[in-house]
Length: 301
Image (cartoon, rainbow, N blue to C red; front, side, top):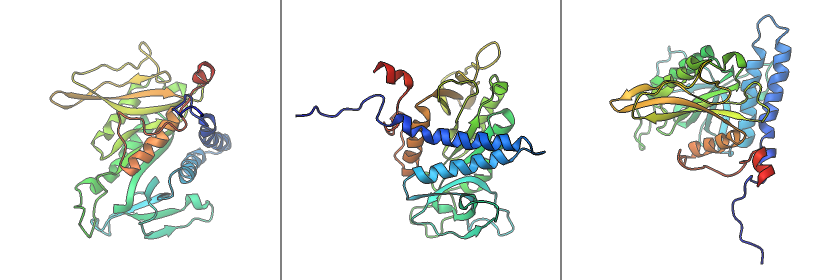
């Protein structure tokens, strides 16, 4: 009789799961090379957004649709302009599409759709590089969602006006360059999203100079007392790990942003995102063991 199965490390197929990360980075690097010949280098940023939408569309359960576009609420005046978001994840089975913006020079993944507010599950703001300016820009754009977070709708409310209470949002960066490795300011700016409903921090797909296929993850850590930053030329590099200076959010509560790196982080984020969308995420629990592995585990276990 065969032995009873148990969870193995590294888990089956962990390297194959990481090929999606490599494909996104490959398309991004190719676009960046081409963009270098342009007077204004923006093409690789659009490619980054499209590649992330492409991966999410293939990975997420089919209940969830992925698009660039607009979030529409009956609670906003018709004269109020709707901001455009890079990645909107919505309930594909229940949501109508209010309108479609087509463009002849982009693929179907580049279309912009208008989604009713009650069917939106997540918004991701995508940036090519992690830096003080891009983190600030990303947070400011996510703050355009604040009017839709100003209240919550009762479950039996027929005419929904706000984002769901389970809504999530975050930042997604493709690169952290060595020129920004000591930028504590960039790390601290990510704290400004703390006031946003469902803000979970973010992801940095690659760190310059890393030999392993490590992904970085930004998340909050609480503290009863203030803490100093661990980042700076005389302290430490964001390409290794880092903790920002804390911000006081209550009498005995301070919050910092931490950045960690690991080969398993991309897979961990992917399945945490599914759990967030399904309402089953718990920060103290592993959402899934699929795709969990490292080269070190491969050689030692």
